[in-house]
Image 1 (tube, rainbow, N blue to C red):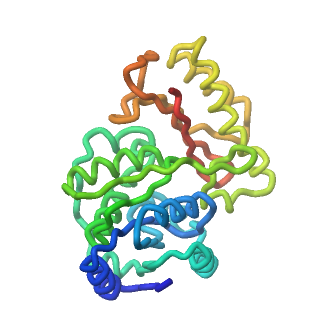
Image 2 (cartoon, rainbow, N blue to C red):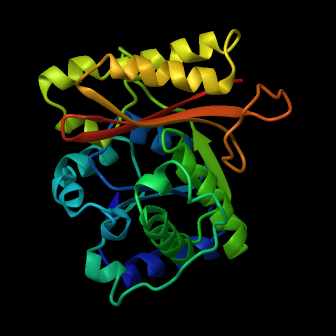
Length: 280
């Protein structure tokens, strides 16, 4: 495994691999790696000749400075995990390396970045699009792997590939959960012991909501979920939406012609957690 810290060194190596006809799989991460990330690397390993993992905490996608400051950073541990998984190349750039000057690119994402996460985290997806586009254009992978926990991000990245007109396959990978159902996330390490015990309520409520959709309309189900969270004083529900999986428009009926996904964000202590569940 080779670790690169500059774009020049990385692209020099990638060019020789591309000239050899090697297929390249990209796994972009912000570090603090867990089993969810590992599953992406493992899948990339099975489908490509070369796997590139990036570790970069992207400042432009954080709308809260304190969130950026507290984001977990475990580089030495991350690199050891990637060695064990036999990743080929790891790119660990500095902020200056990725943003030698201010990035003013704005991508037309339509309404995709105006709802859910976009509504509550102003500028978040602008920053995501900036860094992901940089990585795509720098590395030129054949496939890129993203977890479905960040479902809205996944939809937006599909759109970004269309905008950039890239010959690139986006590979969605299933959410990896703890034994109690909590979706694995780098942010989970920030939960206190008490809050960690409460966190499984998020997934439990999603599962119950899916079971109740036979008896309730989407709007009634949203009311039920809202009331369930109000009973949990420590869990602050930021949003709960049931959307179709292409344009992220809210659904008001159980139309079988579109796939539906329930998405939510919850504040637990000082940590913000997101999750989603397919409702079809």
